[in-house]
Length: 362
Ligand SMILES: Cc1cc2nc3c(=O)[nH]c(=O)nc-3n(C[C@H](O)[C@H](O)[C@H](O)COP(=O)(O)OP(=O)(O)OC[C@H]3O[C@@H](n4cnc5c(N)ncnc54)[C@H](O)[C@@H]3O)c2cc1C
Image 1: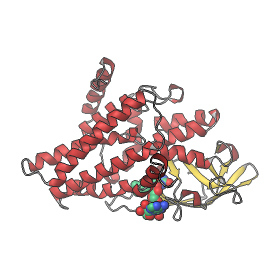
Image 2: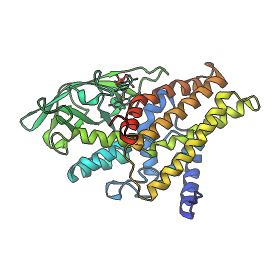
Image 3: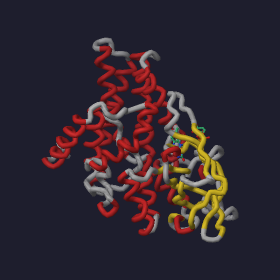
Image 4: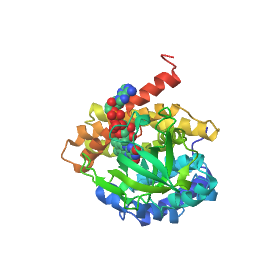
């Protein structure tokens, strides 16, 4: 396969690069300031024609092949610009399980950034074991009434809408009693409690308490009890190769670290360079498979695990090169610790690989 840009891809890359050069330094790429201005960044990227590249035209996307998202990720990393807002997993969840009416109502605003979204799955007692979630949604008249507590909800404080999992049938077997909803975050029955991350960021995620929050019954996604299937679609896409677009960022960081040490390369940095190159080639293979129409199932767990190893090896390299003195590099190390937790922990990915790919213990 030829991985060089086609004339169309090269034209897209040149337009994007010129656009990014005009905006150099106008958007912070990390810290609380990044999270505050992320909605604005999303809308600017979309308005300029550089976001929603691979999603259907009918909902505001450009319906381009997946390689365009890779070009986007590469150019954003090259320019030191903020990353592309990650919401593909929500687009897939709603796109696959929502009715056409729900898709038409909600996907365009999600894609163009005029409506902000969060994912309300995890709870204090239900993370890896998501099926044990205890938030309930009870039908009262035309609305479901929601009671419960979600945690680690990314972007919850800026979100207009939440893709929420709640138990609608307490008597059904636990996976079957869960339903999914599109619930408004702008209502009195919702309390937000911020969380402070180890790198000092306070705007990335929060806790959300639902105390008799209401959601119209027609904002149930799919059928009652379809929540688990939706959750599997969402987490499957959270782990899919497109999120591996971060490889461009890892490569850039490795090159920056290398320029600091020149010939005295610590082992951690050499290892990070090898790992990053391995991931880059792996992403290309996945991309080639995607272009051939291969649908990935549990393989996403392999990709997520590889990405975690690479991000953490780059984090270790940053620590080896700069110690704790350089805030940005130290934060890169600290944030890499979250990678083995978010979107399903590394232990859970290993369980999935063992049981569903290697079929061990069957
Ligand atoms: C940066 C970040 C963003 C996040 N964003 C969101 C979000 O937007 N929405 C959302 O709903 N959630 C979000 N999460 C939450 C994330 O999905 C959960 O943290 C994750 O699923 C793990 O759940 P837990 O924290 O409850 O840990 P637990 O499930 O309690 O796990 C604790 C430890 O036990 C291990 N463990 C648990 N069960 C097993 C098992 N069966 N076999 C082997 N080991 C096991 C785990 O691997 C882990 O090491 C986010 C998390 C992070 C870090």
